[in-house]
Length: 223
Image (cartoon, rainbow, N blue to C red; front, side):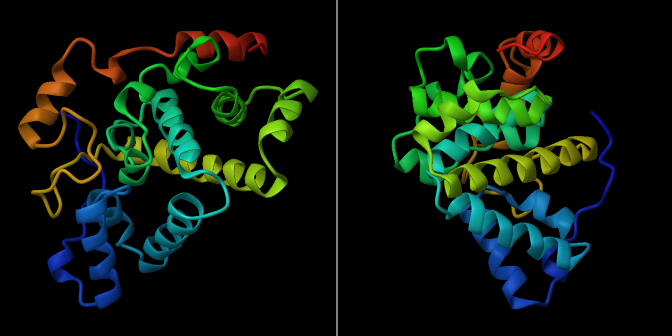
């Protein structure tokens, strides 16, 4: 077991009603779940900076939420943030996104799971995440499917979630540790602590798979 690097703030010690309401939202709706916010709660300004940005740019905003959800989990699979990669958006599930749609994200260009619009957003996400050179072809794809405000929001959202995920993976936090007892926004197979540990131990657990094909594209600057 990797050692957790920063302690959780116990919600029971918080007296701010608005913070407690946000923790309750995390407990019942997830994305994020309570553990990451229990880290940010050490600095209330950080707690709210993330909560407000996430609400405005992920849960709400001008771009399709399910597109942003695929981009979020693409980042998780790229940087191997298990905490974020084991969460699923309830809103996206309600709009028809199913678990199968998460399984081929690192191979999205060659996959039949995604349409051209989703692939354009994922190519944009890939370029941001892996520092790939961009060209007219990428921007032609983006402007074909998205408005400039949507492109701005998706890019900003990818930058925010990439930075947060790179940070969270250094902390060694996990699920079912703060305000435990709900399965809100957990990926299938991780709804309980016991199921979560069994899923992570399986040979086909997503975080055990490499991103070699993306690394190769990054090295050559090709898609």
